[in-house]
Image (cartoon, rainbow, N blue to C red; front, side):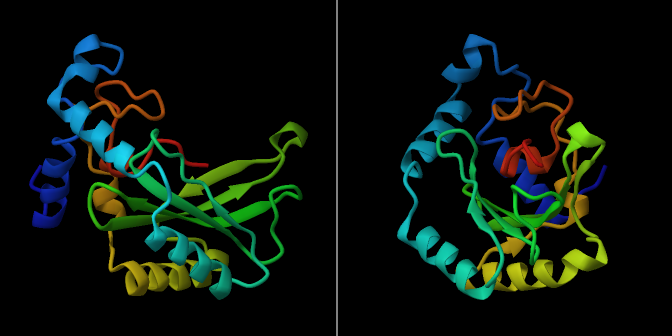
Length: 193
């Protein structure tokens, strides 16, 4: 499969942080140069930076009446994560609908996805999806994308690029195994809800 230059560069980049052809449970995974490089990067970002704190503050200002949740998990995922609920939606009163921003620490790139959750115990549903977003999510999508680009200068990764297979890599988060990973899993996280 021939990749566009931007996607090809991102695929080459993630190969610098995950050892090719090695399962995460193998001792040589953690011993690899790639894994150690990722560990150093994660350690350097274990505390929120002033830039990230400033950005999350702007998100709160720009989305009044919305629940804002910094879902970043330091030392586990190579990205910052921010969840912005749609107006009137809260995590304790389903449905919980939101737009989620994933901002990579490996490169100045980001992804957005729409998330919908209702109480599955009472017959509800849960789903998430990259673009194109359902109509009711599109205003938040555009506003969050513009804020990320204007404030941080990050570039959005297309859905096609996000779903590019990287079968020789196994990212640590989300219990990935060889053959399953896509570029989004390596740049950001496999855990999406």
